[in-house]
Amino acid sequence: MTDTSNDQAVHIRKGAPGDLDWPTTLARLDKVLRIRTTPIGMKMFETAAEMEAVPKIRRPKDIHTADQIVSMASRLNWTVGITGADLVGAQCQAVLGLGAQDDEWYSGKHMAGVWFETIEDSAAHQAAMHVVPIGKYEAMAVSPLSTGRLDPPDICMVYATPGQMILLINGLQWSGYKKLEWGCVGESSCADSWGRALSTGEPSLSIPCYAERRYGGVQDDEMLMALQPHQLVQAIDGMEALSRNGLRYPIPPYGIQTDARAGLGASY
Image 1 (tube, rainbow, N blue to C red):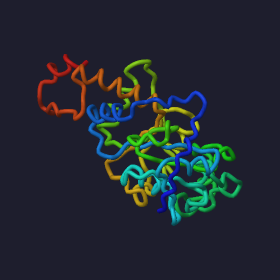
Image 2 (cartoon, rainbow, N blue to C red; image 1 turned 60 degrees about the vertical axis):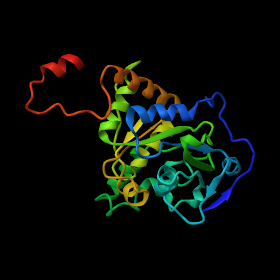
Image 3 (tube, rainbow, N blue to C red; image 1 turned 45 degrees about the vertical axis):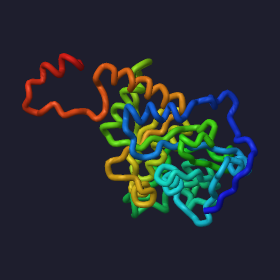
């Protein structure tokens, strides 16, 4: 990795909320959910120069998967920026809109016989993936939210256990309830998390795939939620309200043979 730091202002999209107090926000998140993996942000840039202007940005010297780049932020607390040329292949480039998305990529032939039985199965998988539209962006950066360097990030990403994740979801649903629905493409499930959140603006939950765990160091018990900054604040607000009602993490086991009426009377 190399550092390229300067004082040039970071690109901020028109109308984007760049005034979040991240130290306070993250302290609130830690209090309600006890997250063990660093919450991070991701931001897309229309030019590589804008990405390279992020303070203390690191640029890869080697070729990596997008999973590795994301985990450099979430596991090592680095701020890292890439272009499509820094990524190992078309699958990673396509999800971020930094390359591929051509007929050959959509054919899925590179995955046929490996992840899927037939070329038709592979093509169906490719078509099912959420990807950032190609042509608008040249670069991407990730950074711990605590640094404030992506002012603001397009999306936040939170790794959490299933028990933590359901309370985060409950927090999102506390006010303005709506049913949250996601899909699972299987392999390349980064399309279910950051690909979907970037392309739709919706909170996006995924079960990290083989590649994320093999190359990105994601742990067996971790799931990933990608969501916009204001949605993360909404979830924290909701979790704090639930906590005041006694519904908080860690969820204490009640006992499988205990009379449930007392507990249910308080929480349901």
